[in-house]
Amino acid sequence: MIGAIAGDIIGSAYEWHYTKSHDFELFTPQSTFTDDTVLTIAVADCILNGKEYAVTLKEYGRRYPDAGYGGMFLNWLSSDSLAPYNSFGNGSAMRVSPVGFAFPSLDMVLREAEKSAAVTHNHPEGIRGAQAIAASIFLARSGEGKERIRSYIEESFGYNLQQTLDEIRPWYRFDETCQGSVPQAIIAFLESDSYEDAVRKAISLGGDSDTLACMTGGIAQAYYGKIPDYIAKTVREILNPEMLEVIDLFNDKYCL
Image 1 (tube, rainbow, N blue to C red):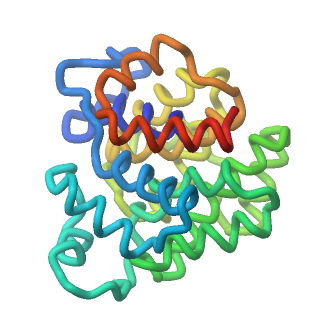
Image 2 (cartoon, rainbow, N blue to C red; image 1 turned 180 degrees about the vertical axis):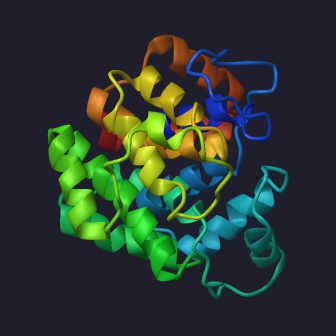
């Protein structure tokens, strides 16, 4: 899942100052982790330790209150309720990468992705987005080729993955819905030739750059393998020891 977290951190500097270029500085003084990283680690913690998703997401959100959460999630964090709020935002898909790495069958991945999403994003589109990213990761780490991944996602989730990034980029703007960002993130992976290229392509679309790169980065790690050392080193310097402990335990169990 470190690939998703690295994508979040790299994309964070371009979320509100988006670029349509593939050629940009990977890390800047503004590069930081956001809610994507916080909640991805929360999901990993749940998987590692059998914790409840709703309770743990709320605990992590309150532990890192300034990570840039969406308005509906912030309202949920500040409430005493654990009930979902029918969101179809891409928050369900940005945090799901640990599910794609941890479970041994596609059916189990799909069930767990729904479980992780539905505690907040119980709208069908919120669940669909999380399942599509998790399934892409599972298929990629299982050795499936890009055309197999493309056809499975199109047939199972109804996303159009036939557009090219060059066709999407001119009109694409900030879109925090699953249906308006998950297909684009998957296409960025499909057109890539390396982990770094995948993240650069996702960010070059503009818009919700950290989340696009987070979703793409998780799939790219699963497909290309270990992320480059020069990226991993900088990411580890940005994260705190508490986060790194969960990441390292998760990687030791599921990603090595």
